Length: 110
Length: 400
Ligand code: SF4
Ligand code: SF4
Image 1 (cartoon, each protein chain N blue to C red):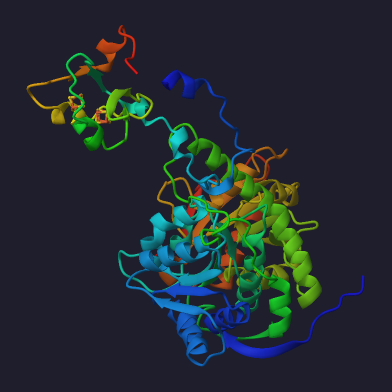
Image 2: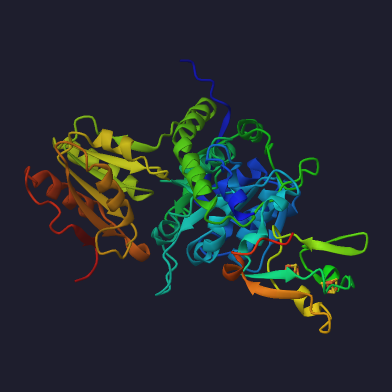
């Protein structure tokens, strides 16, 4: 994710549109807001009851669902706000928020 | 070369009226303004043109200069020509938005009627206001008299909108001394002005529904620097464009303009560098002292941003001593803004001319030919190796 964005060659000043204008509509998707994340939601598929509350509440559409089932998280855009973990029913508790630096060892679940 | 000079009318007008006439002839799509002495007349005259149906301009009266400049930014970003006028604290209140206009590369044109900044409160001329905005990324053009103010405003439109420049332009004239003084000037026919400025067709603008764009997006450490470098390029390119536009304007008007005026500099051993109306006083003294055999000259910078450092150094090559007259104090304690830039520009000259700064005319304090004469006498008395810059800064006309 971040390394992907960082390794991409960025245009020099002669090649950029002037005035900070952005000429390509909808190109905000190229900006990986997941870059900023401090806390990472880690999803436990075993515990999940597919109530879709996390999917509904995520402000960034970063919870991925298919056919009414959660399939994972989009860490390119998940900003780590923790709303999904908060909304997950307490008895289920299928989402844990862990610090990114602690999570670095673990592979991403998406 | 045969010069086809267009039909012109000789008229008597105040500086403000002349600027308003230029704006009528330009007929910008939007004028947004807030009144402030001594610039008020400009938009007051212009509002009459709007009320009388002489222009189709959308005239926006705002609640502050901050809003006036913001409305101009909005109009220009939308894709039309926008203009305004202000002075002194009004310009200071626009400060934040000035940077937004230049950073977004919006070709606004604004007249600034130079007036001292508060405090203490003062309505008379000095250059503190526009010098405070010198680093805002705007092109700055200073006018000596009513004719120049009129001519500069018209040329500013062409300079600002040039695709290689795309920067806002500030045109200055001295408060009261020029803004409220009646002078003879020649004005072009309306049609000739319209033809000179041409139609405004921005390549990119917000209301272009077929090519939607985003303006004013967040620009962090990975792009901001590149966009600032682009702005500098616009100013670098402006030097040539300003001269091209001046050439075209001369063909229409018969009046010639450059980055600065070098007056009787051919064999000069001493020179005064001064902007705006005071250049008239200095020119008179140059003529009088030349009659007595003194080899002296005058340099009147017209364009302060971009600063024509190389060109100024060239014209000062071989001059023994130079005095800069600054109508503002930068409070650096190391000289006014024109002095520090000019002295830096001549640093590489060999032999290096001696340089001294004279801060004068703050808050509208009058300057007299005798004062100017005294400066020239000091310069002429300087011998190579003299520390002419002792004192480096003289406060001319202040009571001790
Ligand atoms: S942490 Fe926030 S952004 Fe990330 S998936 Fe959960 S709700 Fe969405
Ligand atoms: S809120 Fe919890 S239980 Fe419901 S779908 Fe999301 S992870 Fe599964």
